Image 1 (spheres, one colour):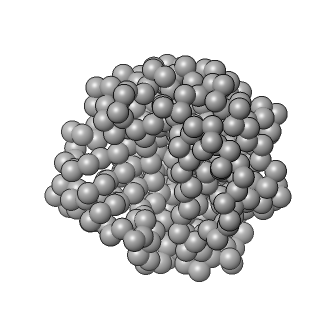
Image 2 (cartoon, helix red, strand yellow; image 1 turned 90 degrees about the vertical axis):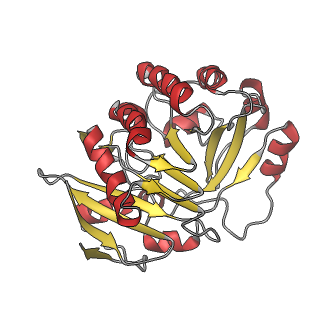
Image 3 (spheres, one colour; image 1 turned 45 degrees about the vertical axis):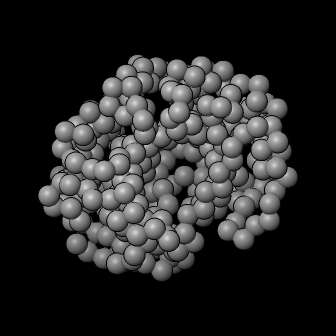
Length: 309
C-alpha cells in the first residue's frame, strides 16, 4: 500500500488517499480541534473496509464494497501519520485519539481487534483514547464479545464506544442505515456490560436532520443516563446527503433546540459536537474524496484540492 494523494496543507485536517497493489483505494485523516494545538490533541481517523456494504443514506463511504483491510493495512495508515510527526513512536500529545470510523463499519472486520492489541506494543503515549463508532449490526456478536475483553484488559479507563442510532423511530433508523441491526434493548444490555463505573459513558449519536425523530421517553426506557450520554452532530454535506435530500437540522450558529432541552430534562448529558466548518471545505468528512475519484465528480465546493504525493 502507498499514499498517492493528500489534501493541500492545512492546520486543521489532512486527508490522505492510499492505493493497494490491486488499485483499491482508501482514505485516512489526521486532524486537530482548534483551539487545541497538536501537542494538546491529535486525532487520527482510519479506514477499515474498501467501501462499505451498509450504504447509510448520508455517508459517502457506502457502496462499491471490495472487502476488508488487513491488520497490516490498517496499521499502515496509523504508522504513516505517526512517523511524519513522531518518528520515535513516542506520541508526545496530551490527548491522542484514533477513531476507527473513517470508511467502513468496524464490526465487520476482526482485524480491528488485532490492531487494538498491537497499538500499545508499538507506540508509547501519554494518554491514548481508542474510539469505535458502530451502527450495531446483527451477526457480529463475536466481534463485540472480543472487543469487551480487549477493552477490559488494555483500555479499561479510556475506551470511547459510540452507537450511531440517529433516530428513535425504528422505521426511520432502518431507512437511514439499511441493514439489520441490534434493537435498543440489545444495545443497552451490551452497554451495561461495557461500562465501568467512573469510565467514559457510552455515546448514543444522532446526526440530526430536519425530519429526525428523537423521543427522550424512548431513550430513557432503555438507556441509563449514568452510563449513556447523547451526542448531537450535524449531518455533514456529503454527496449522498445531498442526493437523498437529507438536510442538517443544526449548524454552528443554531439556537438551542427544544429536543436538547428535553433530553437534558430527562437526565441525559448532551454533547453538541461541531467540527470546524473549514473541514467541510477540506473534504475530511466520510469518504468524500474516494467518492469523487471513483465517480469523477469534482469537489468544486471544497477549497483544498488533492495534490500528488
